Length: 132
Length: 255
Image 1 (cartoon, each protein chain N blue to C red):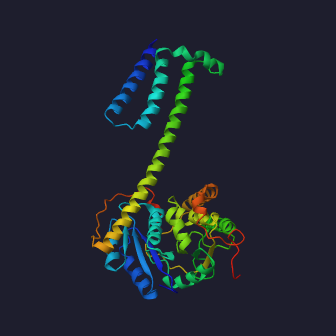
Image 2 (image 1 turned 60 degrees about the vertical axis):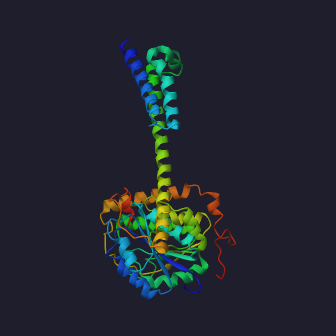
């Protein structure tokens, strides 16, 4: 009985938090959709954990709770993978932007007397070792 | 201009304010006809200012992108300004610009020319796992490019106009991408790779990884990079950039 209370409260709180983040425009819709879908699918299970028991038994898992745990783990893994993919894409985009900025700057330096400056932050990427 | 060709020497530089003047001066005296571009890869010292003082155009990245990013910027610049040949030269004085005419000569029969050690010139030696890694790379890359390559990680290389456009659009940014993967990618897209023997000078800054553990890690990473480079899908529009040559682009005229 206590498990039901904890899980249902957690589910509802997480759902509310996602909605609040969306309301404050801190979360892009495309990510929010994933989380909302997961939240809505999982929240009822918090109230009725034995909803999945029959399904779980059919695939050879002792209880619905274990099934949820397993499915949740797989889900989190997939979402993490998706975020890595997004980060790679973003890195490629910022890289192109930096190159574009450098090209424009070199043009300005050569043709319009833009100052050559040392205005870089001491910010370095983690793969600087590649310099030989 | 050398032989009616506009030649650009790309010098990727990361905190090279001390080595750069010597290299730029040497290029100016040995190769009076060429242009230079210093790619300042987010240096925190006076690299950009020094390059400008010595009269070289500078492309200054707002933050450090690593060798791959710096090189792609160099090729984008070369492409944008319509250069016929782009030559990569390290800013630390390892590469002797006196070999550039030899490389240009070889470019007549290839798209990518690599200035290679272990090919008769100079007396650079390595031992242990690092040597195994280098031999493995040489064997595999020689097969991929269908020519004998002895120094696949050399950063001293010349590209023709088509390859400049190719590298302006595609240049690997990961570890060893600037040497191994860029070559594999170009070769797989049909570009012709050749090497000319050069002697490299002792590097003035930095130390090569000497410990056996580091060398083994290097071997592993090189293998991984090679594997990835082989299985990676190359976009069609990049393959279209390779100049058509008889026999799937590997048989050369005049040989």
